[in-house]
Amino acid sequence: MKIIVIGSGFGGLAAAIRLQAQGHQVTILEKRDKTGGRAYVYEQDGFVFDGGPTIITAPWLIDELFEIAGKKTSDYVELVKIDPFYNIRWEDGSIFNYNDDKENLLEQIRKIAPDEIENYKRFAKDLGEIYRVGFDLIDKPFHTVGSMLKVVPQMVKLRSDKSVYKFASKYFKNEKLREAFSFHPLLIGGNPFTSTSIYAMIHELEQKFGVWFAMGGTGALVRALSDLFQDIGGEICLETEVSEISIDEKRKANGAKLKSGEFIEADAVVSNADVAFTYLNLIPEKFRRKYTDKKVKRMTYSMSLFVIYFGTNRKYENMAHHEIIMGKRYRGLLNDIFVNKTLSEDFSLYLHRPTATDESLAPDGCDSWYVLSPVPHLGATIDWKTQAKPYRNSIINYLEKNYMPELSKHIVSEHYIDPLHFEGTLNSYLGSAFSVEPTLFQSAYLRPHNRSEDIPNLYFVGAGTHPGAGMPGVISSGKIVGNLIGRNV
Image (tube, rainbow, N blue to C red; front, top):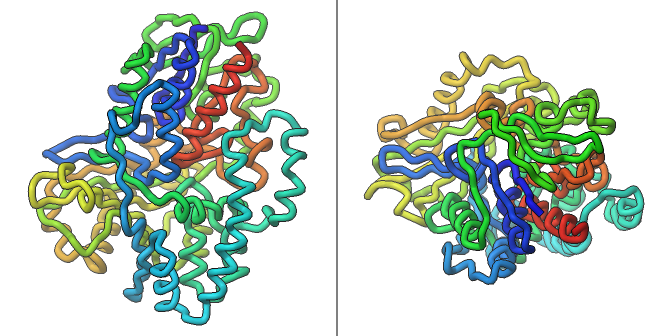
């Protein structure tokens, strides 16, 4: 078949590689001048900045893509395991050095709350069962009520109705440990206080398989997958924006209309564009019985992000590759972001320093960075045209005061993105950074399906569909779609 993939994020690349390897003729249509989607790469003043995802877990999912094409990952990109996975920092100076060394983890817990050692052992044991059930579902489609009913007994047994924070609180009394073992949903756009406890399995995933980095940055992995796709005969069209998915009188997709006026014919269409954007902007509502405008707008969406990319003319060796910087409030701040939708004066941050692992991403003696702050999506009444600069200044001042002395003086290259970028450049509804929020009632069968319920030969990959955001999730969505189309041939 001739298949069009709209968008070249990790989900789109994974689906395209699988479909091309099956023998279809696949064309990726990418709006921007580079592949990668949210994993876009910025280069300026000798610095390389990965635009989005930087944490690689489940590396075998990447290896699978090369194997099905008859290639080896190592021939295209070098993946290295990093240690520590993260430093988790609190304002009182406490640091939790987080990796997969069990003795180290116990020592980190002992430093914070010596009486919680046995609690962690119980937590880890019970998490193993959640992982066994949860990760088994990551590459299974949920298109029927029956597919959901099969797993309901297991989900009830595992108390999936509990939030990740509530699950952690069942074991830990110390608030810092509750935070350290519940923050992971934020990495996929979820609120630890509302995301189902199934997402606690991220900790177990990291413990089993580590946290990895692609030498050259995440962009090197994007280039590797793009090269792999083209090496097996796939076609990539850059700066090619789709204006509409064409639907025929039988309510089937037959191609894509481009902003340029051109029409590209196809037997099936895979959208790696934001699910809500695809339904609201690329498909006329007359073809959408299930996903009407009202239904799409009624779903809840993840937070957005404010991200500052900056280069310094000195190194800050005290900072690890990944830093999780906890602010003075946890529940209160998350309520402001997800519920109240207000821009707080305080924040929690994710600080990324890839030059801790790969010095080639900055000039000699320099560091490449980005700092990310979760913020409300555009459903909030925040004027980012006036608020962005003051918010940027408050983040830099905070880092300078607490962790990176004289930072302002040493920044020699910089730019930032805010929710308007996610909406305008990345075509993300409400400027959400992770699309549909991963709550219990927006998971599995209750999440937008990988095959459209309105148009039978339209498929979805990426953060907004099952299984959800994060690199393992979006790559697995590509596997699901590859299998679905493969079975339909």
